[in-house]
Image (tube, rainbow, N blue to C red; front, side, top):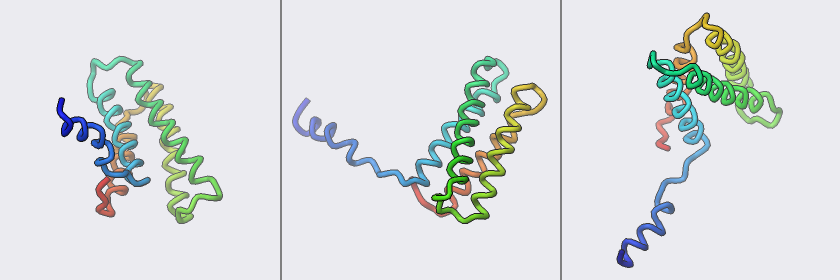
Amino acid sequence: MNAHHLAQAAYASAATPTRTDRGTEYELFSRITRRLKAAFGDDSSSFSHKVTALHENRVLWTTLAADVAAGANKLPQALRAQIFYLAQFTIHHTRSVLGGTASADALIDINTSVMRGLRSTGEKA
């Protein structure tokens, strides 16, 4: 390996764009939504795989609920209320999916809608 390749390798991470909070949230939603789709889109997925995907999604939404409930949160009150409502719905619906009385489609749809909202500013993360 010559000096040029060594320099490229050393500085490659510095060349990657810095992710904004919004971009980080989008990537987190994207990763979890992909896992939900993989777990529930394949009939051969194990119950454990499905439970893991649901758990990750529930942790995400529980964290969001706690964040928007905090007094220091700077989002508009109406948006905070909507996010909190979606978190409650998601947590409740997850129980129904685990119990076999509901599909994960609604959870995937909600996450996808949030991702569209995060991208609506035209920001590239």
